[in-house]
Length: 200
Image 1 (cartoon, helix red, strand yellow):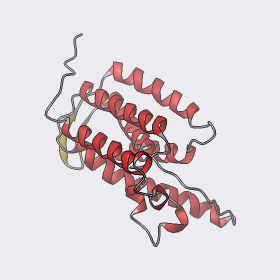
Image 2: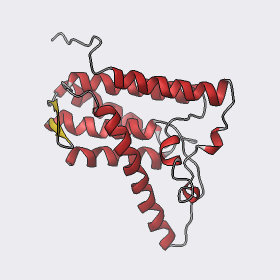
Image 3: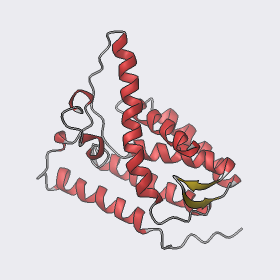
């Protein structure tokens, strides 16, 4: 069956997201007028510097890291088109809410560890947590459809082809998350957040 995947009136939200990510990379890694160490997600600094919840998703380790996440945006955009998304602001609302929800899941995880006197010291960065959240959301949507998101109509319908592709990508992504230098916690918390956002 032919699928119309041409430019749509909803694409501005993906294009603006890509523009922001590329612009930040230029300033942090090419021109180097911004020190990205001030924008990492560092758990022990969040209380005094809560802006890191948002800024950490805009910066990337290197060009390969950025390109992989730009590819994730293209894939999730394609899936949303296949599911019949009808929303001018869904992507941005999802990013905003998911940033908070990711932080909350990680915070709960760290509180559990602190109960056992374990205090992890790490920094995370990149858009992949949001990508994994979208994949979790899209996987469930491909099974059951999703007519409304936070009270606003988005008109997504179940789709078997998207279901098969998203299951494969989620499995590959899970395996990839165990590689050195990749944030398993960030990816898992994102996926859980996306599944939760599907349910509300």
